[in-house]
Image (tube, rainbow, N blue to C red; front, top):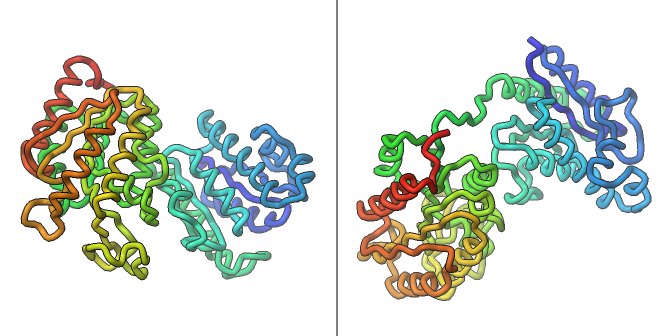
Amino acid sequence: MTDKTILVVGTYDTKDAELGFLSRCIADQGGRVATMDVSVLGDPSQPTDYSKHAVAEEGGSSIRAAIDSGDENHAMQIMAKGASLLAARLFAEGRFDGVIVLGGTMGTDLALDVCAALPLGVPKYIVSTVSFSPLIPAERLPADVQMILWAGGLYGLNSVCKASLSQAAGAVLGAARAVQPPEAKKPLVGMMSLGTSALKYVVPLKPALEARGFEVAVFHATGMGGRAFESLAGQGAFVCTFDFCTQELGNHIHGSDISAGEDRLTHAGKSGTPQIVAPGCYDLVDIVGWKPVPEKWRAHLSHAHNRLLTSIVLNTEERRAVARAHAERLAEAKAPVSMILPSHGLGEWDREGADLYDKDGLDAFLTEMRETLPANVTRHDIDCHINDAGFAEKALEIFDGWCADGTVKTRV
């Protein structure tokens, strides 16, 4: 079989042998290879399909400009920009089916940009000397990237690094052959949530939407889930979003490592996708459970969800800041936005009688939301909890109205 093409990216001046081995592994399994050189100073032993000059020029620069900068970081950013734009264009033209990038810290920095430029569902593999390292911030990770440690491969081929490279070659080609990219057979609704111990609206809403002829994709609001949700929203993949757990926004503005990035709650609005929003679990900031609790949170109430995740309960002013962040982002939306505000709480632990319930904090948050929401957002105040039947009923009422008036597309 020579049915799939893998784009192999790296610095062919210094890693020619390793990249050549990777390409041969792919070819030996029946795959095709397209090569992209992101070197600056040297040249490959054999011409690549996409030269370093083509890469730099795609980004509006040149190899001469990269060399003349006199700074390897600046030079590699020139190549990262060009490689990202070129990879995105080539994929749109159907020139390859999956990508694999090889590198140390320099190459990994570039690899993250290249993978981020490609749509969700495109197999993306990074073979790196710093795979899974704390050097890589969460916000740089594309939602569906795969990484493998390039063990023992910093300089030259050997049996240790061949084990890593051969596995990576098989993985990316196998993924390209096996992947079933998102396919629009039914109109797709994107929904954000946490587990049903905290937020229960998924249980009634998913079957109700499916009965109306829609497909529903539910994303886990733990950083990477929100990143995947935003990526698809930005592509216009959803006919409507049910963004009912915006906790990642609070995580981000309060400095948590568990972040979906600065642009959380923006891509649906930018793409013209109608949004129904509720600030589920707004009162909590998640932190990494196995790390020491940062000083700023030590006086706060907390809930240890498991050994990986601890939730910090925000104070009143911190909750107000979360409300303002919602308003700022939703103000830019280019399609209708409805905000549902349940007055009895926005998470199972944020309910009268529950351990983390704070009526004054909840009231302050809701007041700030009402006072700061922009004119383009329609507010729906409801006298119930987010996990009560009344919340799901209100969401469906808004959605059905939008289907009836054409705001939501009911056919692919």
